[in-house]
Image (cartoon, rainbow, N blue to C red):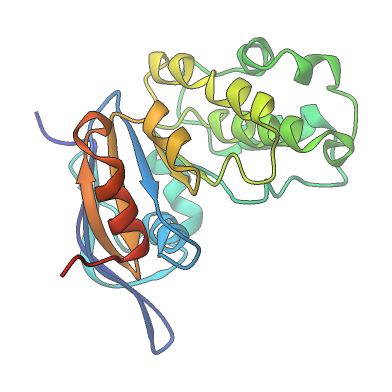
Length: 237
C-alpha cells in the first residue's frame, strides 16, 4: 500500500538561506508521526514547505499519489492538508463558533467533522461558542485552532507546537483527542519540542537538526541517549 503522504528529498530556501536539506518522510493512513527537535531545527519550515508556504527548491511532496509540491498554498487545503499553526492565530474579531465555521470554507465533501462533532470533541467550545476566540484560555484557543483545521475534513492534519506554553493537564486533554481524530480517518503529523509527549502520542518519530532528519524510528526503538544525541548533535568519539 502506498503512503498517504510521501516527502522525498525535500529542500527549501528562504532567499539565499537553505533551511531544509533533502528531507525524506512518510505518513501512512491512520498514523501519527511526530517531528522533534530544538528551536531552529527546521520543523516549522518542513510544515510550511508541505503546505506550500516555504519555497521548495528540490524534492517532492505527494499526497495520495498526487504531486502537490508546487500547488499554491491556498489550494493545499482543498487537496486535503490542514494545519494548526504555532500560536493558534485565531481571528480576534470572531466568536469561537465563527472561528470554527471559517475552517469549513474549503470543505472536502460531507466528511466526518461538523460543528456539532467538534463541540463534542471539545465540549468547552460549545459552552463558550459566543465568546470572542481570543477571550479563551491558551488551551481553549488551541482547541479552537484544532477544530477549525478539522472543519475542512482533511486527510492530513499538521499540528505545529501544540503544547507550547500550556499546562500539563491541558496538554493531556488536547492530546487525548488524537485517537478520535485518527478514528475519523485523519492522519496526523505533529511538531513537538516536548520529547516525552511526542514519544507517547506517535507511531513514528523523526528528530531534526539544522534542516536534516538525524534520527527516525518507532518510539519503542529509540533510546533516550540516541534521541538526546540526535536532538543536540552530540558525537561520541
